[in-house]
Image (tube, rainbow, N blue to C red; front, side, top):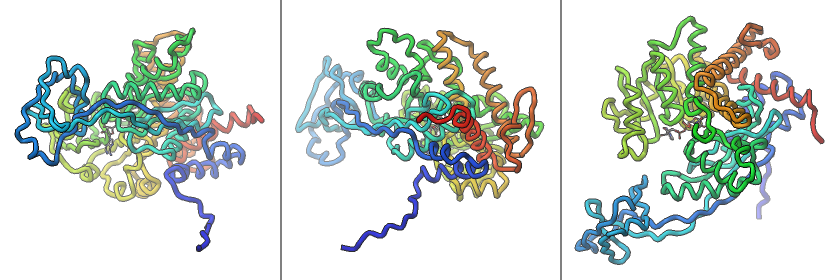
Length: 510
Ligand code: NAD
């Protein structure tokens, strides 16, 4: 048998790729070797499994349909059938109330819908994760993602990003991230609830309000946070003291005013600050957008409120374009208030042209906002862009090659770690309010958020320009490194200097 040749070449993964900027900034500032080692890999990588019982489904029958030509219609209570994205229905027992069921060989014909095969309910196992990257500055903090395309490597990338982001936002947290490998749209609402509760049942020993604090991310929201809170605090004598175990909750159960819009709002503050540098405002500018979820739709609504025009949107279900501008409130109603829009997509929006995903990047506009998933602005996409500014709402939307092309073409960049830091900043406000049993007004939250985002953005810009300054709103004198660097590296320099201070001044526990 031939011996395996070990080349010693490190394997390139999305994690090693995402850490390129960390190494670049660490080299530039001569980061202490031990601190570098502490930050290079996460503190903990938890992988576990959660099981849940899936209900019976009615799946569309596509083969041997002739055999059932004469099968009469069944009449089931519509309330007992929950439609799923793949065209099947979750069958609930109440569907049988007053029903007329005509089944043959496990097949039924639903009136007006066609033939369906009954797939009996069964238990299913899902892979779950929580990566705790670093806690030098405070408890681990980061979102919970329910998505079919997650992996340990992806959660390592996202958890590390949180360590940098919490340092940049200057909130007393470290970085973490986790979630479940599942398409939540393939589950009924009851199954999703059971899965969420079971996830927290397994997670409980690993987290806590002063240890690790999850929040919403792709595929999760305030409702899921409410379930996580309930499961964590269930049966605890002092459960009211534990509200800060998750952030992004409904405002009626300890959530903060302004949290739902916070990430989009923070991005809008960065964009305003970038325009202010040139003595202008976003009024009259135009933008293209990828992702119309929490971050994308809120950023769009706020920017349009400031007088900007939305020209095109791409999401998982389609791409739309209107050179005269898209009415963002009307689009929000189309996506979120139309019960027939099961995929919650902009695709099919009648007041715009339907274009291909690739064509989005060719639209002439002032700003491009990626607010969906990572790795979308690749080198070739960056070559096509006809914008002056890329404002990153998503985590890691630009690849290292995309970065190089943007820099070469002189396209300005608001990097994700400051661009989408509004979410974690308001999560911190939520956590303090929970600790103090307070409830702040939206005006107070947004006032603090604006001050925090704009001053940290100014520090990063000063580092990039090598312009140390001490003004009434910010002080960048400690962070500039004696030469000009790009904005992404500048943001990382700020993060590393703030984290390194903890190791330097507090030392290492042995
Ligand atoms: P969301 O689930 O509310 O929305 C995601 C959006 O992305 C949807 O419009 C979906 O259709 C779209 N999308 C998914 N796959 C796509 C694909 N392949 N191509 C095009 N579009 C696609 O999620 P969100 O909370 O808005 O998060 C979006 C991004 O922002 C993520 O990268 C997330 O990590 C990041 N982020 C979110 C927050 C927050 O507070 N929600 C904070 C910081 C960063």
